Image (cartoon, rainbow, N blue to C red; front, side):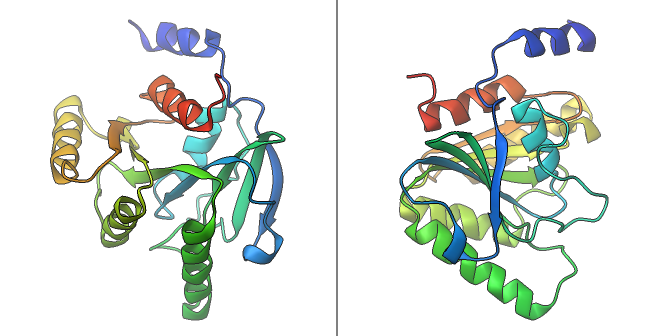
Length: 211
């Protein structure tokens, strides 16, 4: 199937994430929405293509801010699908050129949010397919396993790799994570829409939007 035909088929499928709208952003836990909904959180290094992936998943061009400068997302950013379903974009980690004090604040907020938030139904972890399984990626995956939090790993920017290396990376990451419970790994490209439908289905199932 040609890329053009594939893109057409994707656009013709009903996208239950399409209604996403910016709700609010908060630098800490003091101003986040009430903890009484269904939420899926998005995490990853600042250069993993998190904003581009969010835009592609929601079928919007500028829902999440994209930038040539990694690390622009410096707060908890909430997007509402409706009154009881939300997507949450966490601050990127590991690359942003910010002060050590800011990094510590982010870490504290991240720890508190992930540990105490009862609305969370799953975590989408973005990893650049060319540089997967960095130290904080592994720490976050281990934390999710300990907390019983289901994880969808998106190996982003898969279009940057040829078929063989992309498949090898996918197999290696799956092998590395094979002993962790409730972790799904897939290739993803916001540019080529690789893995888009599968990722959407996964998130919709967590949010129970189709019920």
